[in-house]
Length: 103
Image 1 (spheres, one colour):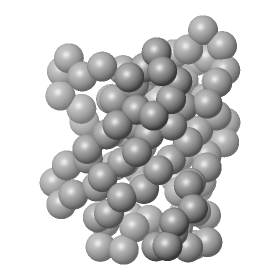
Image 2 (cartoon, helix red, strand yellow):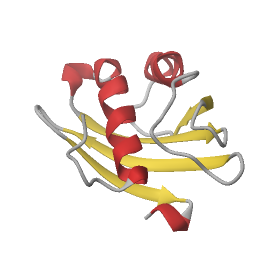
Image 3 (tube, one colour):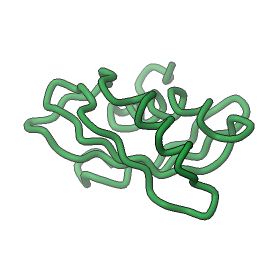
Image 4 (cartoon, one colour):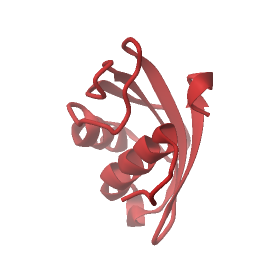
C-alpha cells in the first residue's frame, strides 16, 4: 500500500509493482510496464518492455497479474500509462514515464 499523500500516478505504479513482484526471479529487479488504462482506472491491456532478463514467461505473468485490475488512477480518457519499476526486498521504487502529466 502506498504511503498517504503519494501522487496518483506513483501510487498506481507501486500497486502494479507489488502485483508483478512474483513474476520476477527472487521478487526483485527492474522492469518497465505499460498499461492501456480506461478512464475509470481499469487496466485493459498490459505490456512489458523487452530486456535481457525479460523472458516470455515474465511477460505472460505480468499480463495475467494486472490485466483487469482497478488502479487508483482516473484519466480524462483512456490512454497508455508507463512506469519504470525497481522492485526491492521491501519496497517498490517508481518512475512515471508517461503520460507527462502524471510525473
